[in-house]
Length: 290
Image (tube, rainbow, N blue to C red):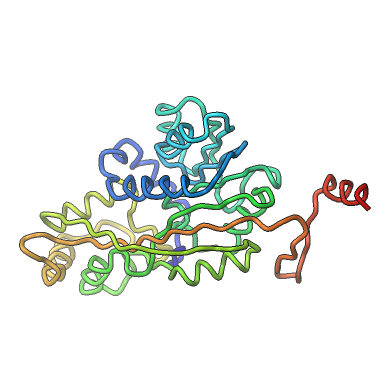
């Protein structure tokens, strides 16, 4: 989860622009997605319906098809250009363009919600996690990755030497994400993290790669207009202390999360108090058993 207030329209525009160059540059994102897909295999799953939340160009959706060939798959992203790439790669999934905070699905629709590096683009975790819980069937699995607070700390420090405006998003700690899952009504959340470090020959290559994957500055109070060459030079100079043997590191704190949707009727805290939700079919079955 991001702690930075974002401009959602700017985020969507950035990913639309990045769609043609995304796959050639998203090396870190592909590695993280591969590691998350390996975790799918830890669970004994036989889902009928799978949602790839924030599917990007659809690599994960295609891999999920190989694991669950009989499942109905839905690929969702807010970027139409990213969804178009998904359909070019994989003609099987149902493609849906929507905001992940307002999922256009009925309750209890999916057995698995898979989401690789989309959660960190949300500053509204109660809305996001509440929606994911709503569309999961009782006992369904939410499996995701996000970024933690040490992500791109080198670049953040370098930018802070150039000006005081936000340039690199700040992300929530994995313990806070776990607490948010519990507050949203999920059960048995498991959180862990690892650090992945990419090395670049120069700082400008790192910055160009971030732009090519859509990870541009979308803070609501970001500076408008072009960034001057003088400011860029100050950022590059401020990055120098991190250089080791001619290579410039970019650190990513990758957070992994897994949690299960609650059983039917488990109370969930809401702004209006605790609520317990039942399907009409479950109540009918309970009545017949009595």
